[in-house]
Picture 1: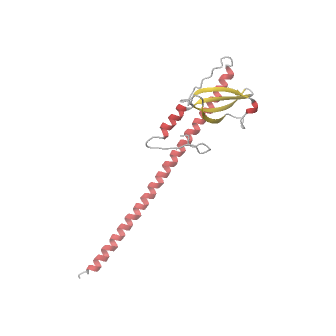
Picture 2: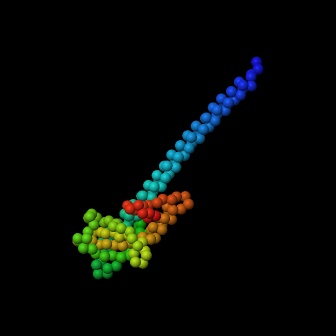
Picture 3: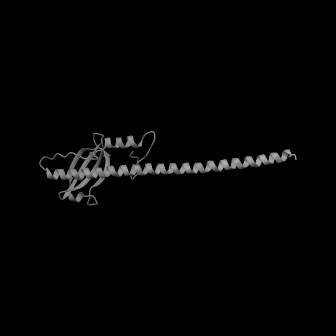
Length: 170
């Protein structure tokens, strides 16, 4: 029995349509799978940047508390130097004792702000309790900021950190 050309053409069209549909469905599923992987990767980079920033802030507060303890032990010398693990990129830029009335709203060590000083250095001000008053320490964080930028602003990864007013920090 001989097939008509219309029958073989319709059969070829149905088979071609089936394979093209199957191929399209596979591409869509693969795209959704890869998109999920990329979203997970971006979220892990985001969490890594948050964790590194939180670790840096904790180290900054720990250095301020350590400097206050060191100053309390050696009041006559008056020289304090940050040191210990996690201090890479930190150097003390200034220190002052504040009035007890000028205390921050919390009774613990806090980072009160980041600014540029007169010399153009990027400094973070940390306030910590000190012998009934408050010790304000300014740390030069320029090198630490460069280290974070080198880690998070390279060819494979770009992470932006913003302050509460939505200005970019990194």
